[in-house]
Length: 219
Image (tube, rainbow, N blue to C red; front, side):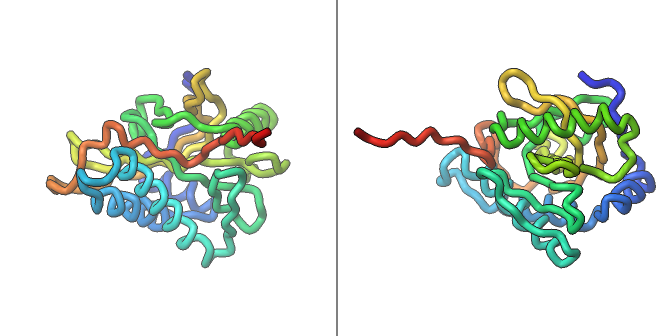
């Protein structure tokens, strides 16, 4: 694990760092809440993977809608939905995190394995991290030089009844495809969601934001 990650967790530091990136907590929190609402609207009659997928989809929609009015653009790159700033120096994708998400002292991973586009983005982020040892300079993602990819992570803690969220810049993936190291983490205040009986056990609710399908022509 990367022990030298730059972590912002104090509200003032979070706000300042987000402002440098052209963001604020409101647009990110709103996106997280929209995802939570989509997840909470599901019932046990839905397929077991659907609640996590709809949470990811609704958060993606909301973060795009919140940023398009600020000059950002949406783009889908091989099943990886992004929102990209006007300078094309920063891209954001939504992903589910594990139980360490939003905890300053721990090392989060993505909940599900990611595909080749995320892997390429992580590789470029890592290269940039070595080139710009200070993570403060404005950012750079995927296969476009000068653009970095960030992941907006969310984790629903059903014991504490809070939604933990962070915006983080990945620089490594495990052998099984989970993002597991970060150059920079911006951790926002956890969002309580109470003891709503509609909220489901999401043990099997992994999201699938990036799918690779091998299509072969029939002879």
